[in-house]
Length: 200
Image (cartoon, rainbow, N blue to C red; front, side, top):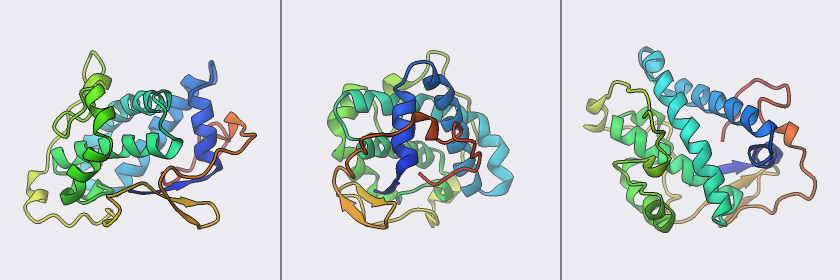
């Protein structure tokens, strides 16, 4: 998958794993991700999906931290959560929100199969053990989108590894960039005073 990596991503990582500000960063990042993906959705469906996406991204923040704790890099941990979202969107037929085309889903799953199996995550059950006890909000499916999918926001051809575009525009293949020595968690999206959603 092709993702970006800059100071805000490192700040978000540090914020999510720091006591006290971690909960605030968590909530701000959920709001940001919901906004980003709702903006990719067809307008008539946006509000129908909001509660589902809030609940879903709330759970994937836990996935992200668990992946970091399991030894995955920041880029890999973040990619894992985006793959989970790809599973969920595909299952709902929300093809316009997908970042990867449907025919690459299996390949993305296989790359992180060990992690996914350890947490009972499957393509059919994208949250697995990360699903909250109370479940997540339902949202209407659009299965007709799968009949002739366009995947207008998906980037194909990056299923074999994680491709990380740095702030300088450099493309790194694999684990991503090295974490800067000094990163202020308060530079995390939502904590830095910038409320504009940024691409992940």
